Image (cartoon, rainbow, N blue to C red; front, top):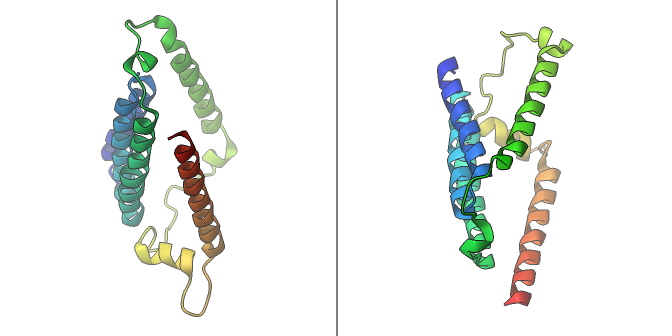
Length: 174
């Protein structure tokens, strides 16, 4: 992946994430998160992980964000509940603390031994990030079970129980 394209998508991802945090309107925040998912999918596509890029758009930008919008509409927030009339400088204090913490983490990581011993020309498998490689890891072959088959099923049951719980809680309030 070209370094400039990576920086373009990375900058867009960081900018839309910050906008999502600073927005007062929850619908605008969700739309900003959707755009950050598209930037992340662009990074995946640039790294030759086409499957993850497509899944990022389909699952997160599609299904999860529709769920977020549904929850926002279910709560029926009034404009006065989430908006302020004016901008206050103290609203930037959490952002400044996050940036200072991130700068500390970046400087600590850049001085670590694992970064100094990093091999820049490490060879990846030829099918890295492809649909066949991901499906092999999840589901295995016809004669074997994949490494992550059990975890995949546990997560699907966990998500199903969370959806049922959300529906039960929402129905109780209606």
